[in-house]
Image 1 (cartoon, rainbow over the protein chains, first blue to last red):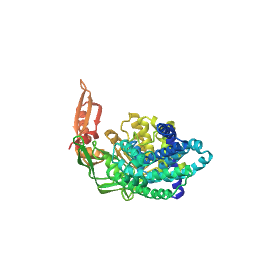
Image 2 (spheres, chains in turn cyan, yellow):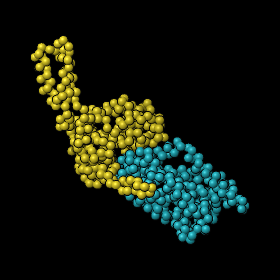
Image 3 (cartoon, each protein chain N blue to C red):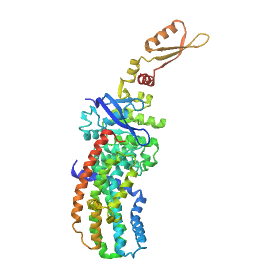
Image 4 (spheres, each protein chain N blue to C red):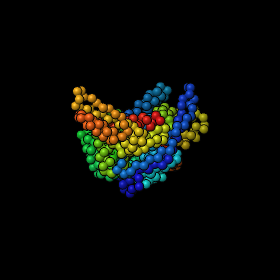
Length: 258
Length: 303
């Protein structure tokens, strides 16, 4: 297939995914409202102990935004495989001459775009309220950071897909992983109360780098060297995901799609 | 060259049985124990067998969805393991007639999407989807979401998907399961039409008279082995199944019926007719009942 045809196919797979998501608007509404509910709730609880400034609220808000889009992204690959399998579509997708990598990549790109749009729409009022127009301008580069940051998370998700195809109870697994990653993001939990070695894990995960970099940009305090770490983890985790998924597909073809 | 060729396919699955609260016991299931078959162009081959006999496993291996432990299979000369992607481009597949589509998308959108995945251009995929929806009599419901389709409509849409890229080889795994008689007949007519176009079709079904109606050759599979193969008539003849001849005789005071069971209906019928005519009586009605494939199937499977 020529590259032009491949791009056209990629676009059509994305369009199909957009169509499906657009017909389930409830999920989109939650994506927009959740950060307000959680960040607001946390700020409310914290207000019993100290005065919560607008900057504190932005910190919480961006932190939860990052955690939320990260969770969605980590779950995307595994959930896609799980849903396609239970809907009886997975074998029909594998049975087409189109590579599953292309299908997975296109569907994940849609989730990236939806996540970025939700992040932008949800953050605009808060950032404008605290920082004014300059805040809005700072929000734009954070979109690039979040886009880059979502890639390694998708890689982690693909690696998780390997576990998912072996297990029946995907939801239980995902709930455990979501809780774990939420703690390890460094955005919603006081990491300093955990053992020292956890710090290493936190820094090695892309959520922390994404959160700190995005926050640094919005606050106007620079992005430090975290961007290099983010780029490195993008390559590393994506490679891990692609490698793991290759093994998963091979194992599905050997043992059957159950 | 055969359209579909499978030689000595073997496949084992590992499964786990619960023993107690947490413990599991590993068991090995021999799904295929050396399945060999050949399907020619323009032929409908029926794979029959009880549940768990290995029909679906065979279909999945032939359609590149499973890798066999040993043996090999070719579709139009292409190896299903080494040349899987090329094989996928020339086969159509119906696996689960009641699912396998996106519920929020319409029948038309689903078909176009799979058409694109099978390598058709956007305009060609749309054109084929329209054609096929008409062929399977779903054009009136083309824009209805899949989730609103009845079981019969879903089965017909599955067949349309299997044909979207105009494949020369088609695998139909129980395509009429759970369908009403009218929908089943529509699908049987469709299969006959596809056969006339010269395509090779491998069909699995539990509906034996349906298989007898559409299949040129049949393979009876049990415990992962093809036990008997041939045309439905061949199989019945080889098993020595008996035809029933009923002749109503008129002309004497009260009509009577001569009933004979035989493996050679032509000779036997000639004998009865000459006997009746020789005794000055008339033949009112003749009925010859062929043994069903079901009898043959039960005989083969139960050993």
